Image (cartoon, rainbow, N blue to C red; front, side):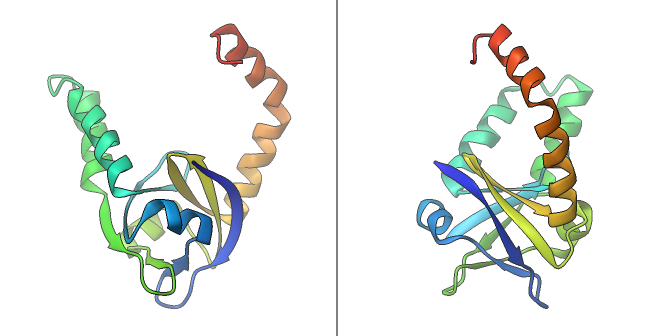
Length: 144
């Protein structure tokens, strides 16, 4: 399980180090895809396979499904984890997520999210302010 929050610097070649704990679980290659809420999603190959198979189950007859599949699958890139544990963030995805020099690397169970650190701090503060209400909603659907 991928959990935790780490701050890392993007180097001049658009590479960022994955935390050692994440590297052990993710393997020698990962898939970086456009995420939601202004971040990027990073999946281990087996998790990407499971995620993309779920997307494939949705009807191609619906415009929303086709659009979302194009966004996620068309924007995805498979990248190698180098000997130093770094991954290359493709320019197009770095720009899409508005990533600066310092990023938050956040474990979210089956994926990692890459956030610009300022964007992450703003997002996280907003969620923290709503934590009680969010927990209430999750309790109403039997999650908590």
